[in-house]
Image (cartoon, rainbow, N blue to C red; front, side, top):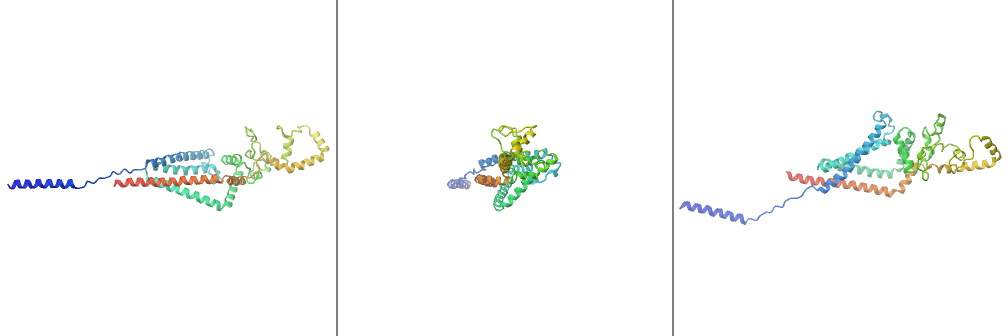
Length: 343
């Protein structure tokens, strides 16, 4: 009898436990579906892979330019490294490559250290751009003096560095359509174009580079000798008398000097009047052949004409950099949120 009582007691206890369990409220756990934003991740990756490749290309061009000039073996050729176009390309390419690499790999591998470095680099670059812009407006005269000094160095070493030569030709011919710093006379600083170089046989003496010449309508082949003798005294008279181009005065030929002398004797007064007129209008006529405006003045006028465009590009660049910083921080926050679930 005692055995059955004990068994009955345990059965009732088991049934009571089951009933209590059945009455307990069931807790529903919601599955956490949060994850790293793939859209943000691949936007940062795609945007920076472009800059990564672009920076690598610019860096390769700069290194190739230095290799062609044999600069690595003879660094003394760098008269002013800050004005060397190849060095500027190497510097820009290196900075672009590093920023693109940290952003690209950091986003793809979800590496928080590289993303932090990417955001810091962009922040430093943005700060430097803002500082440069503000200081540019405050110290405008100082910047103008530095630009003048740099252009003087370009003129002095025009024939010594092909990169500087191509750069100054592009500035004078294609960008600003100018000549020299204040005008064509500034090319007297160069040994080849100095008027005294005529004594040592320089054909370019008292001339200017071809990039100073104004383009003629429908010109197909550029005349590389168009700047010869344009600063030579009496250039206009020589051009009027001895030019053989169509539409210009071609009055006398070689072998007629005696007839020419007799003609001058008969028309002495008229020749004097024409000579004075030619002397007065000489600068005007030379200005038709070459650009007589200095590149510093032309640069200031270009900046005034395109101030809104330059400002718009600067604002757009700053906006993209700020956007990149925000994206990098958001992606880092997503990565840290996922890592917190691992512990």
